[in-house]
Image 1 (cartoon, rainbow, N blue to C red):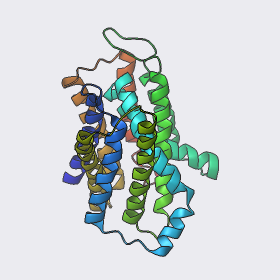
Image 2: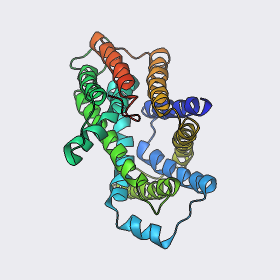
Image 3: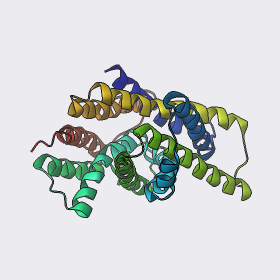
Image 4: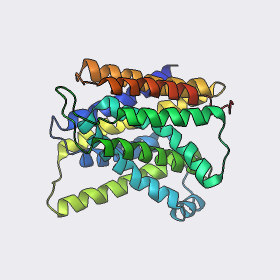
Length: 292
């Protein structure tokens, strides 16, 4: 259970850092870029991935790696924008509900038959995401007119990342940790290209402090994945319990931090969204055991 708690804490720390980015004038793109660099270094030291010619060949010919490498930094930037436009709580709702996207994908593209729990979970998730959208400004709240866009795009984008990650895990000649390492390396390269374009267009300039900020973000990102994998291995006999604990934990801790530290405001319909999110996660927690 310790690994689950640590993974939850790392996930919320990432959201808090992105929340503070605007206040302290942090260039999130630079921070994200150096976070991937630190993740690459730590992943190499911890997992010591074995990169063979066969692995490199399959990587270069597998478009999933490329799509994932592009999506990862892009989703970081979108999550940052969503947090600034809607707050931590509603952003968490969108990221947690994205777990239904792989189910919808498997139904539409592969014709997989969904059981009753999965269908109910999808329905509850869609209701929750609709309730999470700040359709009008609340009292004292500063809601962006594009808030609905951020929540929906994160809902679909994070779900797509999950779909691509699941596909990479199925690669037989590449262990999970090696696939992870390769993905982080490619994400760093893509992020560096984005930064280079911004510098060339004189939209930003290289900043040493962002290297340090990126390392902090990177350690939290690595910790999130590292403790998640550790927790999943430790609780492999109770996958539904692990899945439920991670998601409920992130929603609960993230909500408490947002309310107590950042004083975020929620409308009644947003509170209903939290309720439906929790119920949807509870219903979908048995997806690993195929309960009907």
